[in-house]
Length: 466
Image (cartoon, rainbow, N blue to C red; front, side, top):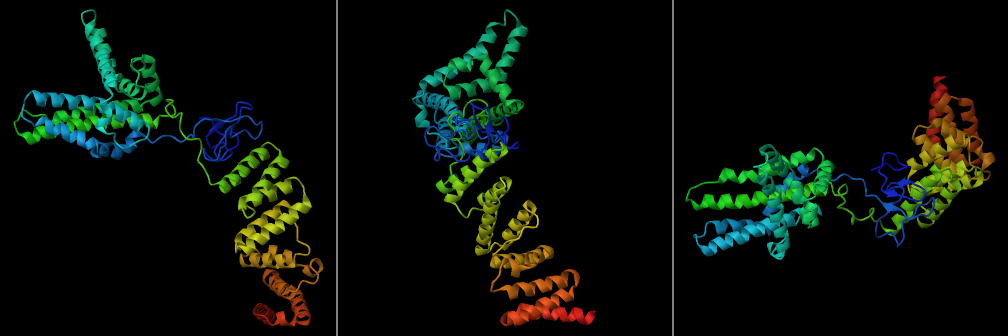
């Protein structure tokens, strides 16, 4: 599957025939429950998008060996196995022979139904009663085997080499032909060499692994064959033969399930993964905004982000995107207003660390920026920066705060912190002394706070040391 045009490491699950773009599940989020008729559409040209599959590889059949080996041990498959075992030890007679023939033919068809259902990722064994109406499928299977192995024998008199070659080919393609018959129910398709080739090429080297596994499993019952009259061995041999037949069928179904998309067997798979309504609105806004931004359509990106924020005003990623887009569009006043609002949201939610990260990125976007008339927010930011060791950034915020936020009631607390920053950064006792004196004169209550006492203690230690 080709990669998404906007996330190169992700598969392009959606294709637009209008602008030839491919989109991943992050660009076009959601699933069937989120899409109204005619949706989703390309955000660039409004053409309806075509689903290409989710790009996730199927589970290799050999990694499902546990499920495959346990499959026949689940009812009602187990009942069919036990029925064959019990019938094999009944007294010989016409009725016993007819019962064994009936059960053997049922197992013959049952194996095809198992292939089809496991190929559809249904790991609940079907009921043997459900296959009794599949007489047509039984006839097709018999004709398939006769055609594959009888025709080469008819050519023995003409060319022994040709006949042996055709028999070897028949043995090689037998699993492919049986799998095609099981999922298509078409004898014509099962006898089509092009179909065999398509399946073998699509499966690749794993087909040989499957072939060897199927041959080994189906040959396994010969290990228990015995001429003994000991009925337990007869029962075990017959039951084991039925078990391995169903195991081989489950194995072939698992292979088809692994390659379902490549073989065109997954046409009805759900498109995407459905989300709750609010989550879908947010994810759709983020996906569309990313596409627009990659195309340089920043105004369109900002528009969809704004609509997303109407649904989820506290959403972190949407707020991040809006901040970056406003900076790219050089909308200074809206950028400053949104930055302040975003930071207040984080502090209100107790996300001080996130607020610091937002502020540091804002400083990269606009170096040297400081808030005006935002004393409380400035102090909260400075305290959070100080606690995380970002002393220079904290000091930059607090310098001359009295000019940018006149009348700020906690200015004394802010300048106590600033005095400590001057002391800790470069041991500037002169500025620290002036700030502490200012606080003592104009904010006597704040001068008596614990923070102020600690700052004065640090000041005294540095002064004594000097």
